[in-house]
Amino acid sequence: MDSDTAVRLTAWVHGEVQGVGFRWWTRSRALELGLVGSASNLRDGRVEVVVEGPRVACERLLAMLRSGATPGRVFQVTELWAEGRGGLSSFVER
Image (cartoon, rainbow, N blue to C red; front, side, top):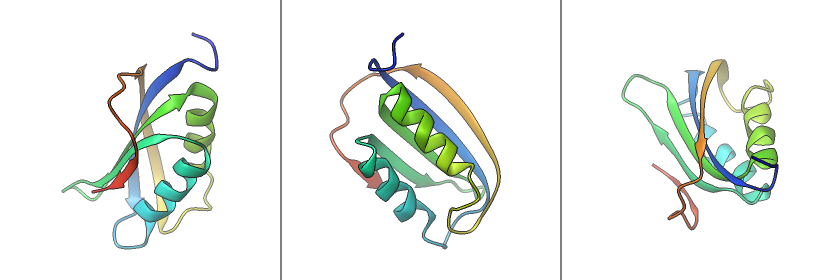
């Protein structure tokens, strides 16, 4: 898979990431990178980020999620890579 092939990245962000503007920040960074997808609060306190786009852009977002420069405090980011599925046209906060 080359760097221009659309991939899907699902990232589960653990830490103090709800109620601190984290989803809005993630949406802004994803849009800057040309990615589509969503950022959703989970009941257990994590945020689930699902994005699709070129692998290099997804990798950049993943690095930003882990950078320590996010709102709140990120303790861990777990990732899952898959082939892009399509069907996403924007980025939404849930």
